[in-house]
Length: 80
Image (cartoon, rainbow, N blue to C red; front, side, top):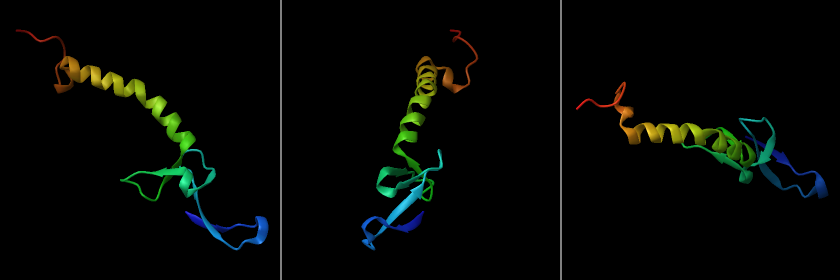
Protein backbone atom coordinates (compact mmCIF):
# COMPACT_ATOMS: atom_id res chain seq x y z
CA UNK A 1 0.00 0.00 0.00
CA UNK A 2 1.35 3.43 -0.86
CA UNK A 3 0.14 6.99 -0.38
CA UNK A 4 -0.46 9.17 -3.41
CA UNK A 5 -1.21 12.89 -3.24
CA UNK A 6 -4.06 13.88 -5.48
CA UNK A 7 -2.83 16.12 -8.27
CA UNK A 8 -6.24 17.02 -9.70
CA UNK A 9 -7.19 20.37 -8.20
CA UNK A 10 -4.00 20.49 -6.11
CA UNK A 11 -6.05 19.74 -3.02
CA UNK A 12 -3.03 18.37 -1.16
CA UNK A 13 -5.21 15.66 0.41
CA UNK A 14 -3.48 12.30 0.64
CA UNK A 15 -5.55 9.27 -0.31
CA UNK A 16 -4.65 5.63 0.24
CA UNK A 17 -4.12 3.44 -2.80
CA UNK A 18 -3.38 -0.27 -2.95
CA UNK A 19 -2.20 -2.57 -5.71
CA UNK A 20 -4.44 -5.53 -6.49
CA UNK A 21 -2.60 -8.78 -5.80
CA UNK A 22 -4.43 -10.51 -8.68
CA UNK A 23 -4.42 -8.06 -11.63
CA UNK A 24 -1.71 -5.61 -10.50
CA UNK A 25 -3.76 -2.44 -10.99
CA UNK A 26 -3.88 0.37 -8.42
CA UNK A 27 -7.21 1.06 -6.66
CA UNK A 28 -8.34 3.14 -3.68
CA UNK A 29 -8.25 0.99 -0.57
CA UNK A 30 -12.00 1.47 -0.16
CA UNK A 31 -12.45 -0.46 -3.43
CA UNK A 32 -10.34 -3.44 -2.38
CA UNK A 33 -10.78 -6.45 -0.13
CA UNK A 34 -8.23 -7.72 2.36
CA UNK A 35 -8.20 -11.19 3.84
CA UNK A 36 -7.71 -12.04 7.50
CA UNK A 37 -4.72 -14.31 6.90
CA UNK A 38 -3.01 -11.84 4.52
CA UNK A 39 -3.82 -8.28 5.67
CA UNK A 40 -1.12 -6.66 3.51
CA UNK A 41 -2.46 -8.05 0.25
CA UNK A 42 -5.42 -6.36 -1.44
CA UNK A 43 -7.74 -7.75 -4.13
CA UNK A 44 -10.00 -5.48 -6.21
CA UNK A 45 -13.75 -6.09 -6.39
CA UNK A 46 -13.54 -7.23 -10.02
CA UNK A 47 -10.99 -9.93 -9.17
CA UNK A 48 -13.00 -10.98 -6.10
CA UNK A 49 -16.02 -11.53 -8.36
CA UNK A 50 -13.88 -13.56 -10.80
CA UNK A 51 -12.35 -15.65 -7.99
CA UNK A 52 -15.82 -16.33 -6.57
CA UNK A 53 -17.19 -17.62 -9.89
CA UNK A 54 -14.11 -19.79 -10.42
CA UNK A 55 -14.38 -21.31 -6.93
CA UNK A 56 -18.08 -22.28 -7.15
CA UNK A 57 -17.61 -25.57 -9.05
CA UNK A 58 -14.87 -26.63 -6.62
CA UNK A 59 -16.98 -25.77 -3.57
CA UNK A 60 -20.01 -27.59 -4.97
CA UNK A 61 -17.95 -30.70 -5.72
CA UNK A 62 -16.49 -30.73 -2.19
CA UNK A 63 -19.95 -30.26 -0.67
CA UNK A 64 -21.32 -33.15 -2.72
CA UNK A 65 -18.47 -35.44 -1.68
CA UNK A 66 -19.07 -34.62 1.98
CA UNK A 67 -22.80 -35.11 1.52
CA UNK A 68 -22.29 -38.55 -0.01
CA UNK A 69 -19.84 -39.59 2.70
CA UNK A 70 -16.77 -39.75 0.51
CA UNK A 71 -15.01 -36.95 2.33
CA UNK A 72 -13.75 -39.33 5.02
CA UNK A 73 -11.36 -41.29 2.84
CA UNK A 74 -13.93 -43.81 1.53
CA UNK A 75 -12.93 -45.19 -1.85
CA UNK A 76 -16.35 -46.33 -2.96
CA UNK A 77 -19.90 -47.09 -1.86
CA UNK A 78 -20.32 -48.30 1.67
CA UNK A 79 -20.50 -52.03 2.21
CA UNK A 80 -22.98 -52.92 4.75
